[in-house]
Image (cartoon, rainbow, N blue to C red; front, side, top):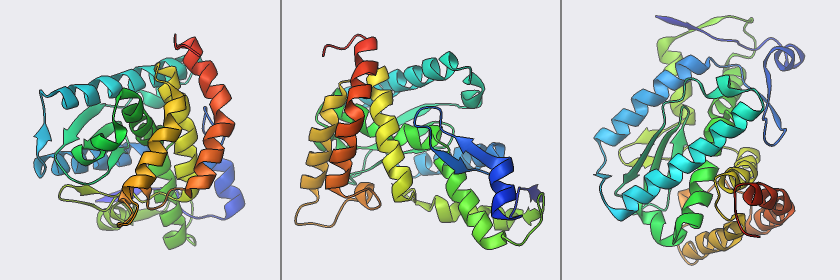
Length: 268
């Protein structure tokens, strides 16, 4: 079985045919991988992870994860509809699950497959804090960061190939697993600092659109940093911007976020 992908034909040609612009942040990125294949692989990996995990359901915490996730999902759908890009989310099949794990972590696979670990809930503390986390993770999916990372790996490995070249099923799976090295109850999605910064900004706006107070983002990130004090840094923070940069960026983006929050009925 062969998968057809856009492969390296030179930086100029690639940027011409496959430059994607984030409709919320305005950032452009190279995304040349086949989204349909990514969504298929993501769904399979998500099911595998759930089968090896203890899913928490019916509890107040599980309901909060579902409720916050659903509001952020709806906010994203409304926004994309308002700008005429509903098609971007047409193949999303959203799921929000709370998994039993002491990891201070959460993640969202391409296609809206979200997992929140119980270990991060004491740090989120409330719905606003949880919205910071889930908005951030959902933003990775919406921004196509998985495609971007896979594209970077494809160009690095097959940069000399022609446009429309083919790679084998095993080669494609190997590239995907480098970006999403998911194991039993541990999913560490390997994003770069630029992508993490974009997810911070986009997530801040999404949570605000969903009616959650973006001013709670700074206290949350401070709590996350405190949780890693004197111990191994949580994987959730491993590739994130340094704390000073993050807080500075949040403060810079907060006025616009508060506009979204006010439009959603929030009190300033």
